[in-house]
Image (tube, rainbow, N blue to C red; front, side, top):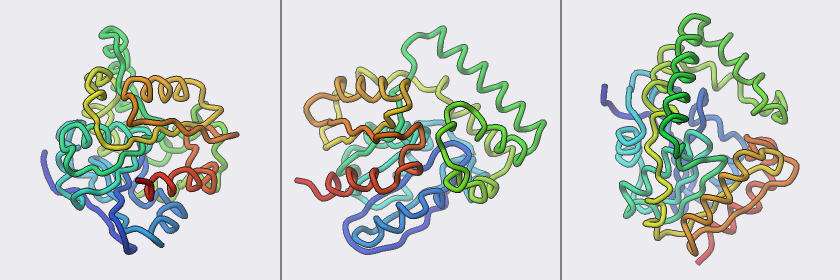
Length: 252
């Protein structure tokens, strides 16, 4: 079901687009969005199935097209986790719209077809769980997963996550889960804009993926590791995150 994505914009300066992670919304960027808005015109998008875009059903390519339509031209894009996968699709499908790209705790996909199929089955089980349990029990359970073991409760953004719906999250899992993503490792060599890949030091899986992304993209990409942080490194260590992202946004 195509539609228009909800987006909020604030600040003044060169445009920056923010794309959140699974179960979140555009409001999830908190103090990071506020700080970026002091020097940039920030647009925070609610991804399909999330926030105030809960009625929009779209996979990664279609969702990326909708995001590109909702965003200003020639912006810097910052995507976290699921949002990083969306932002990567935007950069590959609409390169003229992406001046710079920041990928936080993101991946270019699962190479092995059998592993992708297993991930799709896992995501289908999660979709069924959220439909059966309801939004709040599922979100609370989701935040208890090992991936978020280092995320402090006051940075978990629970209130924002609860603005969604169980149906929206289920749709997102089925249409835009990692198992649905065709691997982009060979295509990322086509990225010509500057790329910053960010990962938390304690998030070993995504740190390895970040290193692989930088190697695959080539000379236009560089890696920044946030010390003493896990998967949600931008929320766990916002000052450290901004210390690497803001100079990148202002760079040549």
